[in-house]
Image (cartoon, rainbow, N blue to C red; front, side):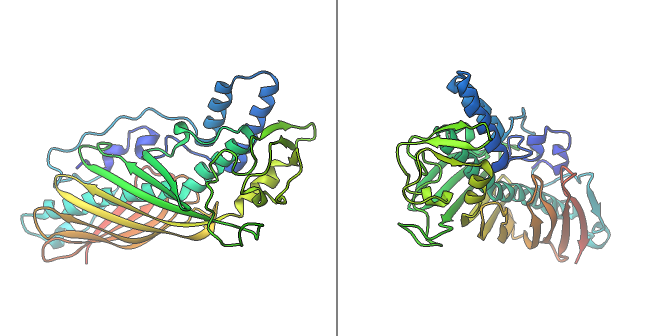
Length: 359
C-alpha cells in the first residue's frame, strides 16, 4: 500500500479524491450562473452552452489526475514526511516495521474515509442545490456530468437517494467501495404533506417544482418563471399549491426556501487490498441542507495474515470547507504494546500531520 506521502506532489484532485477539483460549490453561485444562462438564451445561446456553463458553475472543473503506484509490499509502509514517530524505542523487537506499517496503512485508509465523509457531507450543497437550480431555471434536470465524482450509480426510491461509489484502483490495486443514503424532509406544512414528512418526490426531477419552467431575468434582477402548472413540491418555494403564472421571485428567495429542507442519512465504506481490510460507517444527523455535518459511527481495519488490527477511537472532523479540519485518534493492536496515532487535519495541508506513540 502506498504511503500518504505519495500524494503530496499529486494534482489537487488526487490529493483530495472524489471532488473533481471542486473548491467551491454553493447554491448562490449556481443560481447566479443559471440566471446568466437564462439571459444568454435571449441571445440565442445553444443548449450545449447552457449545460456546459451551468455544470461548470455547479461542480467546477475536472483536473487531470494520475493514479499512484502501490508499494511492492503493502504491509510495509514508509513513514510520510508528516509523521512524528515516538513509538520505535518502546516497541522493540524485529517486527517494528510491520507494526508501524499497520498504523500507517490504516492511517491512509482513514484518510480515504475522511474524504468520503467530506463528499457525502457536500452532496446537499453541490448536488441537490445545483440540480434544483438547473431543474427550476433551465428545465434540464440532473445528468451524468453533474453526478458526484466516483459515483457509479444513483437511485431514488421511496424517498431515499442512494449513491454507489467505486474508487477501485484509484491508489493501486486495492478495492475501495462505498454507499451513501440520504433522505429529505418537508420544511413546511403543505396541501399534501406535513412539516417533517419524508419528501417522496425527487428534488432533482424536472417538473418537481414547476412543470416545464421557462425562466427569464427581469430588468430589476428578479426571475420570472412561466410554467405549465405546479409540481408536487412547489409549496417549498413559499408559494401556494396554485402559484402565479409567471412566478416572479428573487434568486435569494429561492435559495432561502430550498435551504429550509432538512435531511438525514448514512454512509459506509470498505477498503480491501493484499494486506488489510478496513470498514467505516457514518451517520448523517438530521440537519438543514447546507449544514455539512457527518458523524463517524465505527471504523476499523485488520491484517489478513493475523489478528493485528487498528480502530478509530475518536473522530472530530468538521467539513465546513472543501478540506476536513480537526483530529482523528487511532489505536492499533499489533504485538504486546498498543500503538496510538493522532491525526491532525488542516485545510492548508494535503495530508494530515500524525504523531505515533506507545500507549
